[in-house]
Length: 605
Image (cartoon, rainbow, N blue to C red; front, side, top):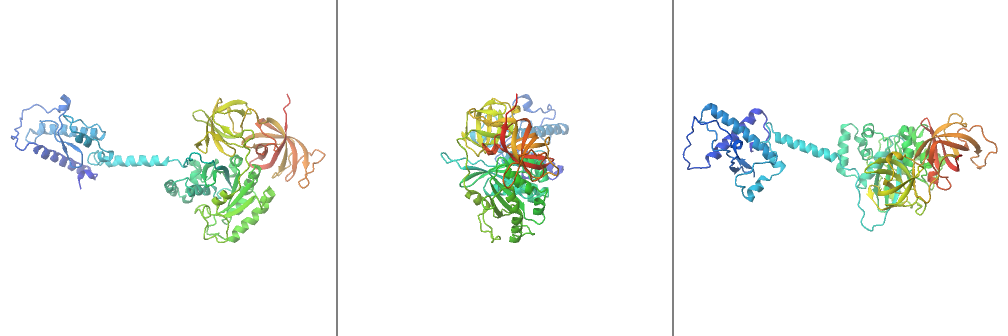
């Protein structure tokens, strides 16, 4: 093997390589003129000075068999051994230094031009690839060329890490627009919501296999091998380290008939406000429960998030609920029908109590998020389940009724600066087009839509149900808060601080009296609120109202009360616009009550 193709193991070996290179130069020099007269050195000659310091160097090129141009001599005064010892060593050092300078120039694509310009073929030889140039024989001592290659490879790996997780599927021209459906994944912490979301994205081709393989390698390094699928949705480093979703993850996938947006809600009780924000954007909820022994019981008992999430989803306006019984492949379950039925029997009475109709609104399904079993294709191990797998079932659901000709209502979920002011939210009713003039409530700022993105794809017009990203003109990012509403100027939404509402007290140890403070969650808005007056109690069975004003209300009672917010908020009555008329009251990290707006009370001047 050519010594230039391998990195030397030691400095001594590097010296040998240099000595061989010098010997090669001498033999090539001798071969230049066979019939030349023998050269008689002048011992008393002046000290050698390289010609490049005087004028342009004369370089005679020769090919080394690898397509590279090798310098043979730089001057006619080349060092010769028969010269005086001191002069010879001095000359050798200068030539050696000059050789390294030229080598570096060639590595930097700054090779000295040969005398006379050369032919086109010679010029082509000079234009080389980085791989050819950075070979160990030409690099720094110790194989610098190989080290350079390793650095380039490392840089390429770093670039690969920043690959976008999601693909943007370009729509063919004149293609009919698919119906947009927003699916929120809810359930107790560690039930497998993010893992199922990541698996669905892989099965539908939204995440490449190589990206997931990279996640799997990184997860193995952290001893978290089963978490890699969830990393497709948990992009935050903190979420990946702890294995807990904090913010609502957002992704999308398509089937033959529909376009789905995944909203991956956090399961931890500390992040329930984020979960409410995610559920308020959803048309459909997927309640993920773990079939593993002990995990289902923990999530379903008091204090578990399975109960609370199902109730909050109903309050947020989700009509259809799919219950995915996850981790059926676990050794403690092993696709057992008995365990599946046990989970089902415990859940159905509770969901009925919350307000779901078991016959129409609820659908149970076994699955395994880690292996992808029963998500896209049916599974052989589960012979007792005869229904459709998860993704085909979503595709077969009936279409949702959307108010396309109604007033524009877009509750803002988030906002940021990016070449202007950008807002995110789900369009609840009406339609928005590019260059349209809208009004931001409750501040009454007139804004213009500069650009419109629906799930990262730019569009000219948007219809209800779509998750949008709008770039606005005429308003600063600091002037917007989550919970503001984008409306059309002809039909503004109502805003105010005081309203009457019907409230159901779900969980509260003590009694609730006028003057009680809580946190109000209504659409995407979060605001402090105070119950200023209790108007009457409502009978749960008959719906009759009490004639006398109650002094207090307690758990499981229904009442009509007057509430006053700390600041002005946008809201509608439940009768006029259900999406902006439902709310939740929370206190001390728990959901205290759910309710609906009955009447807006005008402010007194």
